[in-house]
Image 1: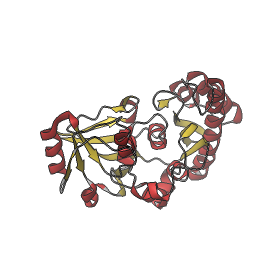
Image 2: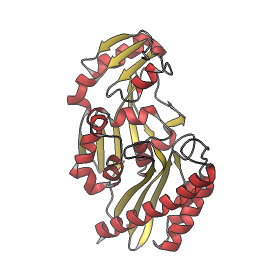
Image 3: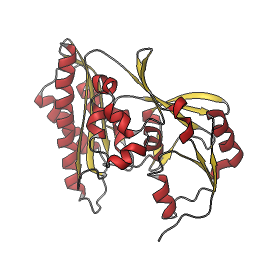
Length: 292
């Protein structure tokens, strides 16, 4: 049986205490909440932190979904199950429910958190694509205070983010807008598995014209990627099947999949185009409903 390397364990009782513990422990410390990503990596010795800082007792501060100052704000300790069940999220950003319905199983959804998912930065992770398409920002808290980072700047590479060793992701912020619609499409080998390919789309439609657009792919490049050329094509245009077909073609060209046990490169490029078109079609239909 595989077991982690030896490590020290500390259970934080406050956010300030957790940050202080990270600062004192240095670069070899890691935060743990749900643990569904970190613990398997530790068992395989792909990660060997010397100290774990458990933040599960901080739910009163870091687990929430609320509307504030024209944004939906999601605490980093909000569990997948809470994201799935939230009517507030479903009203403003149905893409979250789309994604959560195909993430893992109830055991994982009851423990895993949005903060842990984003900080893991797995190339096949679902919520990174969702947040990227929605142009979300994340709040990072450290000894020097708070800083806000756009999702497009958050991932540096596979399993690598801009979060400093003594920082904690505390919140996700997404701007709300009338006439907004979003959707998520995913192909997987079995229910709840990591994606073979997935696409998230978000549109804002004003007067029948696309005012803003976000398109992001998961599992189709070394990191979650935003398809900026497709977004530029969509902005200022009227939604149509032809437009979405063109955007899907761009997604096929601009993704960077690798051949693996889930499929060859050509198949994954095909998926990128098809899933992008489907997600845009559903996002547009939802946006037009809210605009009406």
